[in-house]
Length: 260
Image (cartoon, rainbow, N blue to C red; front, side, top):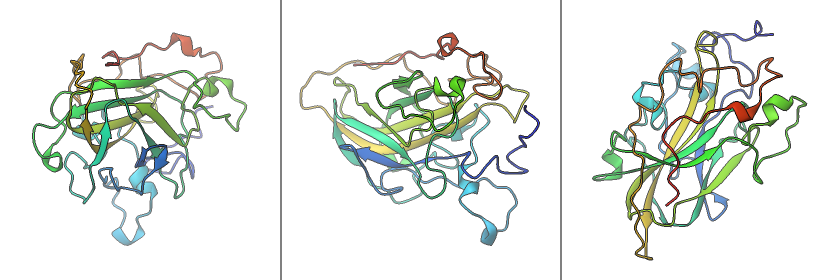
């Protein structure tokens, strides 16, 4: 059942197989593409510039040790002009999938959200500081959609075929300028399709905390550094022919979620 999949550098998996998150959601309303999200670069496939199309931007990260794991390809600095969204600790925010041709989270797998406080101007921050996880989505929730296929082992994953996902900034988050990172994984064995696919994008946000209730985020982690190639928790078939997979067997990679 795996023979019909080709490497991304040879042939797109399908017309809607890959995706990225180009819109921040504020007050349950998606903002404009790249308004608050760092722009990413297309995969260098040797394609002439005039032939490039949006698929080149959607090719996932496959190296868990690449700095591109932080915010997407070539997004470790804010080379594009973008705004910084002002939110309060305790507010609901979210990320939406790009809508041009790849409108949903086509692949099954877990999703996470992270924060990293910038020590200086956000535009110059490479995300090489400490990160803490504020969200983990594995199973289905009230935000999950009714999938349009019959494959139960895919439907177990909460974000499967969702177009967006909302979550809350922890109420005791210290004030400051942050990278807000949303990540979705498509688990694949290390010896197939070049391994697990990583989809990540970052928004610029300023967090205010007028309540004065300030927590201590943690555990802290570096990105890259949260995953290793071949790590059993994230390198396995999440869908293809895996009819016996039980999502209750999924072990979430460290660190734990900080809830404030």
